[in-house]
Amino acid sequence: MQPAIVALKNKSIMISFAKTFKPMEKEHMVTIIEDILDEVKRAETKHPEWPSDIIHASAIVGEESGELTRACLQFIYEGGSKLEARKEAIQVACTAIRFLKALDELHYIPSKSF
Image 1 (cartoon, rainbow, N blue to C red):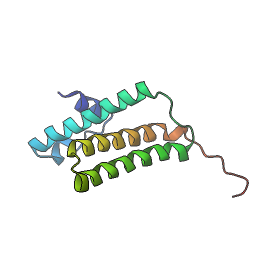
Image 2: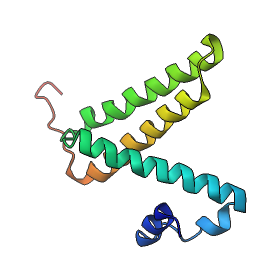
Image 3: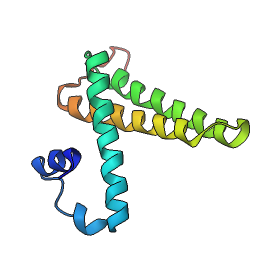
């Protein structure tokens, strides 16, 4: 069994995974999930700190989303590659996962002017 599938089964997320995708789609999804989980591990090693406030944490996800948009624009208008867009999409998923992992610990201290 693929490591990503094992990781997902261990988190009880696998309930309908097998029923949702056709055989070739399953293989493709496994590859995508493995790539995302590998990127999370790499990012957490390279950047172990994550913002403690919800605004800055969400800004990181937004920044990665902007890089995905840029890669897509470059693909359409400048001869960029789908591979670069895929890399950026993996990073968006990675930062979204990191945001969700930290969500219970994220805080917001309102300014006195609001």
